[in-house]
Image (cartoon, rainbow, N blue to C red; front, side):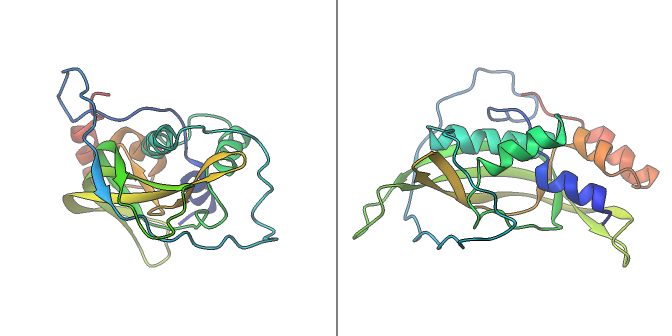
Length: 209
């Protein structure tokens, strides 16, 4: 994978709110709460050179934070690199800033708050939020990691995002790394797709939001 595309995957974040299902113009309904036990938070590595200091108060609400992250993930980077990077640095903990070459094309996503089960000695500053995605394709690469191709992978899957409260607001602490893009953004980023795959993305289009 090219270094330019990898940078785009890491900081491709812009926008907010949840996506509506394709073709559904009805008003959005309040999300139904699910119940899940929140796993113990992983320790944050101290003094990592690739983890800048985070001392800006942002994100007072964990669900809104995850909704904005999911929207930015789906839409890709729509702002200057330094602006996108700054948002990213104040949205994730050091633990969550892992990289991945995983890239998939989605047609919808939904953010759903969780009702956390009481656990012995559970941290009161940890919660979880579901991100449900409808996937159409995963992206494979040639042996050199330069030429992409679409691999059919239709299905719905759930990412349980763990969010922790810090002295500067809520931060995402665990999530499924990688890029989860709407078709319109994949067309912009995957410039070396063959014509047949590009036509597949054009047919998918971008769902109503």
